[in-house]
Image 1: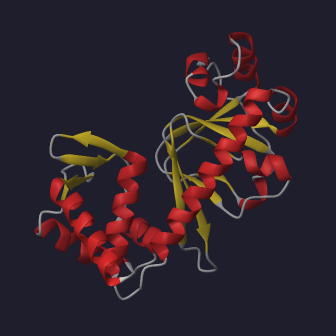
Image 2 (image 1 turned 30 degrees about the vertical axis):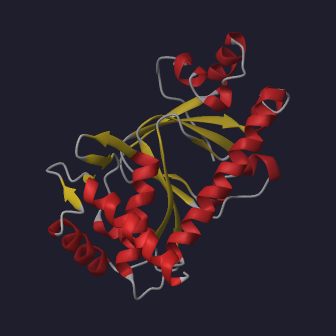
Length: 247
């Protein structure tokens, strides 16, 4: 995989130093990392990385969002997670030398910085603070995986529980507080949300319509989803019901 740098893209040392993963670096080290990062622009829906390319670089998102997906034999996506500005990924592949079983796709127009494996080992793995941050990060990634398994573990006959759990998780990850509740600041098609929750697109559309009619969510003009106060009341009620029934 050959990465060509974007011409004259301004340096953004402030972005790097504001990321907790790099917070232990000195200003001089931050500047060095910035010089090592090769940046490239991707348009919406463009493939950033195929599975076989994921063991050679660590990636930092300068702008936009990307989604991490698993493609089945028919080419359908199972969304694993979404990464946004200031997020980074690929560090686990650099640590164990194995490719990641996922494809990275630009969810919207994005600028990605690439840090080569050799530079990662030379400039980051020699830093004690960075090594501690890596441990914290791996724990966080594991918790994300557990949460995804929890969403997928709901009985397939109870699609509404799956969709509610998915919306709750998206609100936790990408939610912006609003006077009326919380807005999910990532736009998904019904098909993408269906693949995330492992339900059909038709089921996802039906459940979302029902939730909107009941005032649990609102779909805004810009297609963003607002989780209303009723949403959180409903989640609390369902959680109490499950505990009472022993599930």
